[in-house]
Amino acid sequence: MTDELRTLLGTQTYNRADVAYHIGVLKEFLEYLFFTEHVSSPNQDTIASFAQKKEYGEQDTFFLERLPESFFKVFSQESFYKKLEQLADEAKNLPTLSLVVPVVLKPKQISEIGTWAREKILDNILLDIDVDPTISAGCQIVWNDILYDFGLNRQIKNHQTEIENTVHNFMHAIDNGK
Image (cartoon, one colour):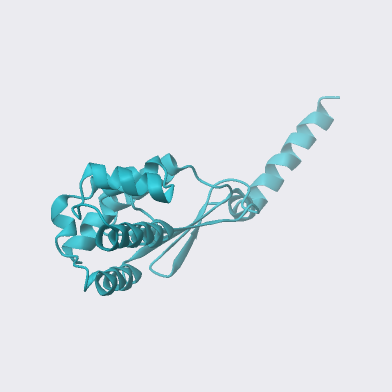
């Protein structure tokens, strides 16, 4: 993994959608840096000016501000499109932990899961998160082409006989209590 991609992933970028989005923000910022009339150095003033002009929000500004100055040195006006394409291609080849959850996760939750995955599984892992409301509770995880189903429906199905016996015993106890 290149230093540039490692730096990009270190800026609260945990899932494939964030990588694509951040590369897009970076592309627009570099176009602004190289093709508009102003001081063409990536500093906080330039980032603030860019964010205001392009109507980017606080999160995007924060993302750009977290990139170290050394990160931008690999980009030139002549080569930045190609370099960004290389970053995108490299990101496509990173290992992925796929999650299927019943509700949309908040950014803080994605950050917590992403941090955990990078500490416990691989330091360059990306998340691929899908929402499936038919999973009533829990989640499904795909890792190394193996599905791990921690959804409530699956757990009920796995323990159906136990549940039926418990309900039967309960009903029998109620009948005997009359």
